[in-house]
Image 1: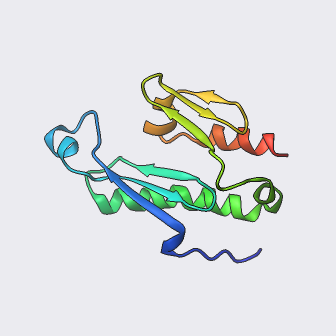
Image 2: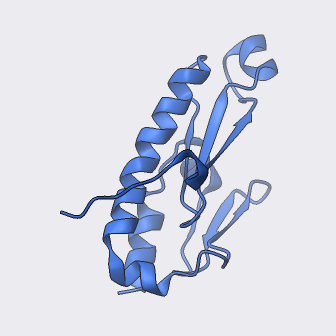
Amino acid sequence: MKEIHCTKKDFRIEWYSGSGAGGQHRNKHQNCCRIIHIESGLSAIGTSSRSRVTNQRDAFNKLALMVISYLSDEKGKERFNASERVRNYNECRNEVHDIGSGLKLSYKNVVLKNDIAEMIEARSKAFH
């Protein structure tokens, strides 16, 4: 198995206020985390806890699995252009559209429930 090296510079971390149940603390504090791997455009979110540290750890653990899969697949890496737009997120229409595969899924399932596995699977099938 080949070694994969990533540094802090390979990721962008965004913090935002959560929505839904949780009251004043959840709605007024920016403790929800989105981590983006800059090279691939893959991202993961952590929103389950009131703790910034826990949410960041959850998001990073989810993203690490996706990045390892992405970086270990050389064929997919060659065909993927990091500057190209990967997905369109439209919360108003409750839709996430994966441009490479053409798959459209519910925004609530993909973003809020962090269920991106179907998107990744469809994208990998489109490039193989």
